[in-house]
Structures are given as structure tokens and as C-alpha cells.
Amino acid sequence: MSMQKMLFSFICYLVLSFQPAWATIITATTSNVSGNTWESRYTINNNTGSAIKWFTIYFDFNHYSNLVYIPTAEVGVDWDVFSVEPFLSSDGFVDAFSFGDGIGIGQSLSNFVVRYQFSGQYLPVMQSFEVYDPDAPEPTLLDFGDVEITAVPQPQALWLFATGFICLLLKRRGPVPLIRCRI
Image 1 (cartoon, rainbow, N blue to C red):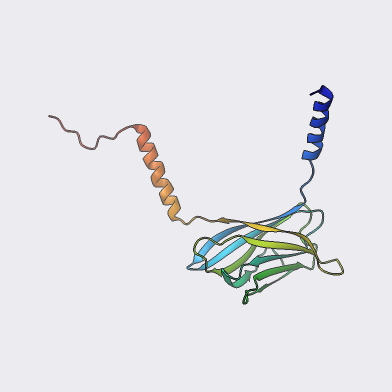
Image 2: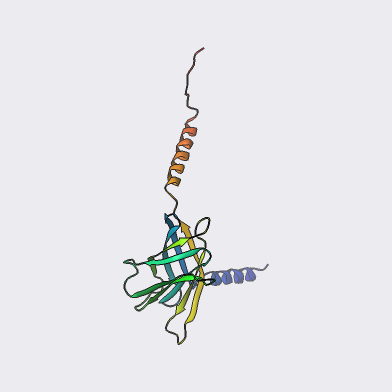
């Protein structure tokens, strides 16, 4: 391969690798409140080219029920939020619409809280979302994707970790003589 082709390939790599990523990223930290009641705290990151004024988070009708939006100070009063229960084969959703500036470019909205009943066997499963443009004559889909869910570990995991850590420290010290016998 000639030096000119290698230089051209390197320049193309540099130019193409620094393109901005225009995507909305929604993450959730999920914790068990009690029994089948779960609570998710969402963070909506705006990495798009325009402000986010309207988004919807969907909840699968097979696993979710009793959707309740919990108002927080971070969301503020300029957001109109309502939830719709899953019905028959239709997914439930939480819809948020901003009458103000919304989520600016490069900004995020945190502590968006939804409480629900989860009927699945394990942790709450992946949820999907859509972002719309409310300024268009008809609602226009700007972005969509899946919510990245992280479950908050139960306190028992801390005890398990501490026990394992203590055992590891004792093992590094060598065998501990429990009984000393002289014959």
C-alpha cells in the first residue's frame, strides 16, 4: 500500500470518526418499593439537534400495570405529564409535554419518576420511548429507542460483598490456626 493511500485512509478515518451522534438517551434506575411495586427514576439526555418538548415512555401490557407519575422538583411545573394504563393488547405509556423550553440541546432532565406494578418474574424488562416534535403541523417522530434500565441492588448484596471481602482478606493473611495442639 502506498504512503498516499495510507494517508488518505487515515484522514478519512479521522473525519468520519468525529461525527456528532444525534440521539436521545434515556436511562432508568429501578428499585423495588415493596412486593410487585417498582419505581423507576429516569434521566433524559438530549443529544439531538433541537430541544425536546415531548416524549413518551411505553410500558408493555403483559408486565406493567397501575402506572403512576410521581411529580418532582426537577421536572418542574412547565411539564404536563400523564399516564395511560395498559389495556387489552395496548401498551401503557407515560406522556410528557413541555409548555416551556423543554430539554435544551446538550442538557438533561433527571429524576423523572414513575411507579408501577410489575408482574414479571425477574427485574423490570426493557422499555421503549419516542420523542416527538410538537411544533410540526402533525406530530412528527424525531427519535425512538429503548430505555437502559439499571436495577438498584437490594441491601443484602452489601452483606454478601462484605463477607466475601473479609474472607479474601483472611485468605491473603494465610491459614489461621484455630486450635493449637502439642503432642
